[in-house]
Image (cartoon, rainbow, N blue to C red):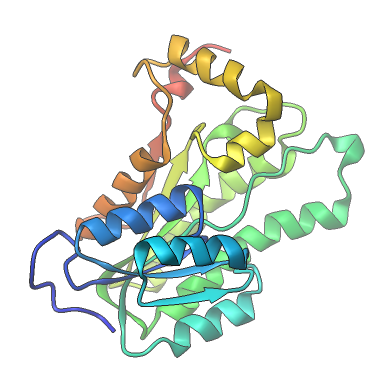
Length: 248
């Protein structure tokens, strides 16, 4: 399935699997992969959104299932023909639950599920992703500041960089990288904030050093760069418009 890199575009002829590819950062990355000459493979839980994404992008393959079913994810990746060049993991959403409302079993699933998905993709990448190809995971920065409701998200935020650094050694010469995003103006953000979305956008435009809100295209461009630049592995790359520099 892997291409030979000939033709036009940074990803010409290369196959990129996007887990969580029907909306937000995943969909925008698939668009940029296609624009760079690559061939996206889209996986998403929502079959209808996946159908709409496929009608736009004409991926080489689609599959509708929950990527957090790690056994199925491994089977899917392992069953793709030939080799692939890169895998992007955007599946999942942060959990903002105060302690009094937090079920311990749910907390364990939220925390363990994010790590288990990364491990499953890394295991499946051996012998499937070409040497020098990349596994790119999407994480966040919000959990770096302790706050009520951030216990699980904070734990995931702290764990993913260590996991990525270790995986980069274990799956080399396949590369592994983590994108730690701040607020990104996606449908997920809209769903989480509801009526508070416009106020949050305006606050960020006023306070961020870049003077605007980070969008999916910004994160997607970083993801594509991490695929193309084969000197990068094992590190975490922040993209938040300078949000962490602000006093709270």
